[in-house]
Image (cartoon, rainbow, N blue to C red; front, side, top):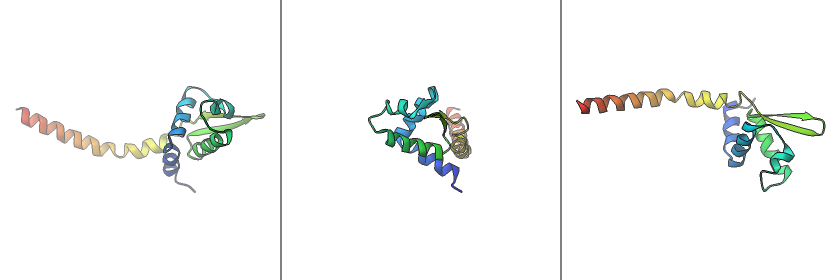
Amino acid sequence: MPDPVQSSFRALADPTRREIIAILSKEQQTIAQLTGHFDMTRAAVKKHLTVLSDGGLITMEQQGRECINRLSPGGMKPVLDWLSYFDQFWNTRLENLKEAIERNDT
């Protein structure tokens, strides 16, 4: 079973995929609609969508002859969970900085 964090980061690593996510954050789109935003083939857009889907960031739903692509509400959770682990690091560092500044002001 693939690591969800790895799959999500892989999906987010590409600027085109990040742009697709931004577009889908505003409204669902078909592959044809998304292709209109880029200077690439439908097949290339489909490959990007597959990586985003594998990363759990979007859902792809077949409706008749069209495939509707939507941002997945919980898709960023593995990334956010992974990043939030490092909050403790930054919170501690920032608290130490604050204390050092306060000591120097007195």
